[in-house]
Length: 204
Image 1 (cartoon, one colour):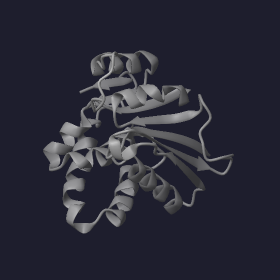
Image 2 (cartoon, helix red, strand yellow):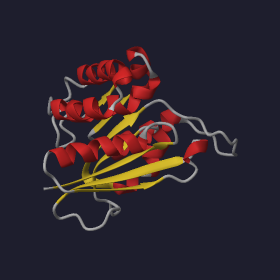
Image 3 (spheres, helix red, strand yellow):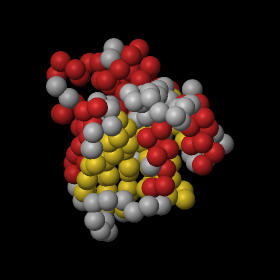
Image 4 (cartoon, one colour):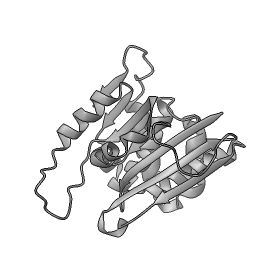
């Protein structure tokens, strides 16, 4: 099997942690995995991307353009910036919560317009304010965990929710485990109806 996941966000959103969780899940399942990150000005809310390539036929750590099976966008503009990686039959999980650029420019950032662009370019998309969901669970920092749970619950990654949680339980410090569990379960509940084949896109 071969499965490519591109994770995109900005510094501080947990892009690298999400990629490590997915890579660990792959290794626990006995699968070959490679990862690569581009971090840039991450500490200043700059773009961060991570490539997670799973399978024995993987050549190289970076996903070629048009080959990703899944794009996980922790921020709408970063998902749009990396949509060229998405394969023809790929899926997107996007966090509707926008991180506004810290430097003012001449181009206005309209998150709603960006989300509409994503939906018009991918029929299989989960679009939720995962940051707000994570806040309801106890901390906005668990948005990345919620997004992995949503992807697993919607069968968009090759690991069931139980396997993903087993990895999280090992890697998340004990003092943060309960709040991450709440975010994980809340995300699973939100995507529980996505397996309906007539419901190719949800916007909650």
